Image (cartoon, rainbow, N blue to C red; front, top):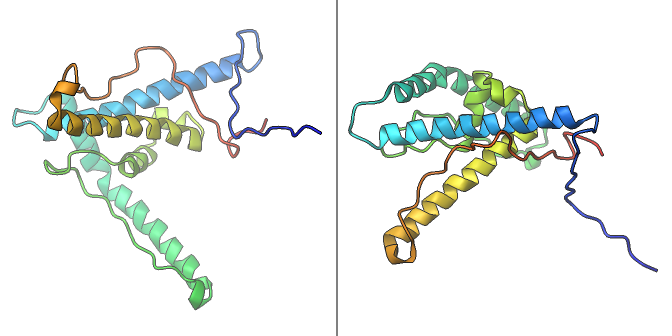
Length: 193
């Protein structure tokens, strides 16, 4: 008797003639747009706060966007925290967990990198078009992939500072995607096969 194998991940290739081709094409284009938009925000803030030179217009625009939305983001965080606390109060005392309210702060020279949670909340608050064009877990997966790339950049920079001879050059920050599409991830909660 042979056992049937189960895979946790499926990769499905859809040809141009398939009825869902145009849907997935649009989703892949939206994923590329979200990846580049997220990278744009991270790069603008990261470079703006790490230099002593006057800010470029795009850097000013992004920093202004953050300042404009930070209050609403923190209100949303506080409302979510209060709902979680209320839910915990409904449970028996022994099962209750301690809750913590995580409010956001604007980036500084010392902490110039925007966190995933900060940008995720910002895009939800400002109803960023590229973010809203994708299903919830799909857009988060696109952003998390970019954050993995930035994490690799920081790890490479640490290694470069210790042993520059092992590198062919100084590591560079993650680039924008030039192709028209980016791969996307659909979880079992987003779609059914």
